Structure formats: structure tokens, C-alpha cells
Image (cartoon, rainbow, N blue to C red; front, side, top):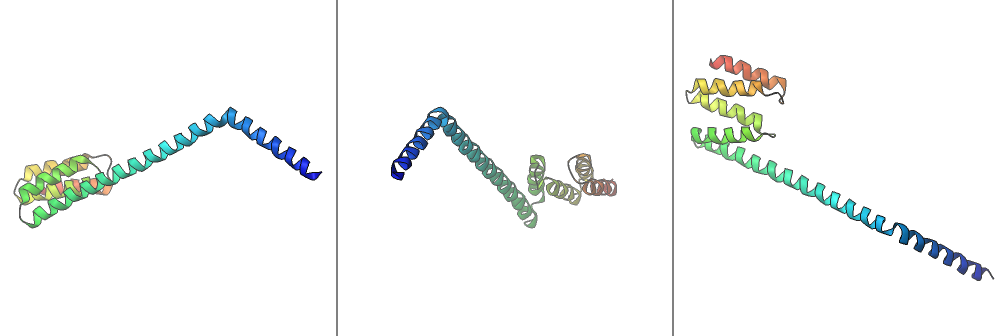
Length: 139
């Protein structure tokens, strides 16, 4: 006798689940697809950011190699490019560019480069103050 009640109960549950699925199934599938698309987008964006940081790191590293080889003019151009890109190496590249300009005797260019660093709003105040000090020392 209890088997009949159990079977009836299982049938009712299955019918209720089928009704729920027929009513909300497409929303559940749409939500699952949306979650997958958002997760894929996040992964793609992080991968893109990582590749951009790696590329900037390689450019900065190549500029340092040019400095070691004594090709200061070429290195200053690469540092200027990295500085304009923004990102983590921007401030370092700006200081390197200004230093190379000062080293080559272009004191006006070095002062201008240091002044650009000092005028940047998004960097730490200590770097802006250092750039101001170095600019005064060059001028």
C-alpha cells in the first residue's frame, strides 16, 4: 500500500517539476548562458590586460637594454612611448626619459620632461615632488 502512495507522490513531484520547467526553463537557460558570457568576458578582459602589461614590460626592458648598449637617443624615444601609454611603467619611463635627456645635455628637454611628470595628477605626490626637485636642479 505504501508503494502506491510513494509512486503517486513521485508522480506529483515529477509533474510539478515539469510544470516549473515549462514555465521557467527558458529563463534558467538564459540565466546560465548570461553567466557563461559574463564569465568569458571577464576572463578575456583579464587576459587582454595581462598581455598589455607584458607588452609594456617588454618595451620598457628593451629601452633599458638600449641604455646598456649606449644607444641613449633611441632609448629616450622608447621611454617616451612607454610614458605616453600610461600604466605601471609610465612614471618610471618618464623619469628614465628625463634622465637620458639631461645626460645627453638637453637640459631644456629634461626640465620639460620633469615638469610633465610633476603635472600628472594620477601619480603619487612623492613622485611629483621628486620631479619638481629634479626639474629645478636641471634649470
